[in-house]
Image (cartoon, rainbow, N blue to C red):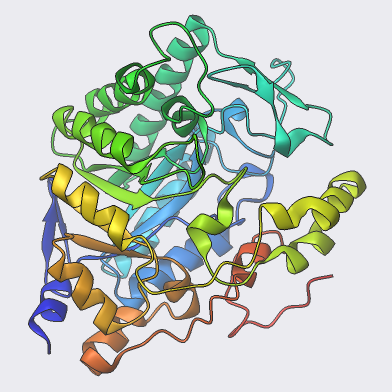
Length: 403
């Protein structure tokens, strides 16, 4: 076994948590919470990841409030689903794995409109691309009272995560959701203490981190998913991302999962590979939205060539900026790539599509060593499969018809 691969497969600590290895199943929205309730598919999905040998599996998009959901069937964290959450964590623990909950709020980017919220809100008033044809074309600006309420919702959700038996929390600060909207200069146009300089734009993310830390205690691992870049001129760039990382390190964050791109504008900056748009269009139920996706979706979902470790150069800059643990994400597709990432000084590796393709990847890596390579073709049809009954899957081993 290569020494670097051996390091990846050995136990490691993340704050007060002992993980059996340094491989993390990153959050990839599952689409397995019908009616907002964690279902058996979600439990089986993460139990399979643990059975396959990952150190930590991450449950994607656990909304902190009803108005924090991008659409109504997403899970939001409230006491009514505690039994289902406990079943989920118990199933992962029974397989020897650890489990993290990704706490998220959509901000203005939503098709969801609870009865008491006239429109979704983010840092600034804007056009809501996601709800353009769903009766909520505009997003409002959060007031100070909205910000305080949202911080309290993160606290309540974090307490539920702890009580449900999760081992870690990932705070979603990337991909154009609420905290990312505050961080990004392209989306945050405020002129109060929450806008302007990067330090001001980080005010809400840092308040959320401090409040979550107070809810779960000093040893409970808290990670944050943070963009290295928004992927377009005028958005968050790597210089500001590194400064944001330093502020989070000073505030006591335990690790950063490095990512990139905005769901609303540059999703392929994150995914790379083939566009999933041809599979997504037939699944869209709103006829106006379907037509818009067909004619204009190519601007956001172009084919973008895949290359292994495609975030490496940006991630190197963040590695130089902070000493805290960093989780490398982005194009990990072979044992050779894993060795390169370890040699670059990254503490953990996060995988998405490769583990969807083969949940037993860690076991294969232990058996195959330096010859391991993922069978994932980066077709990205798994992205479209989120909208199918039963949720996300790899179409290479679970063929589906997108119609």
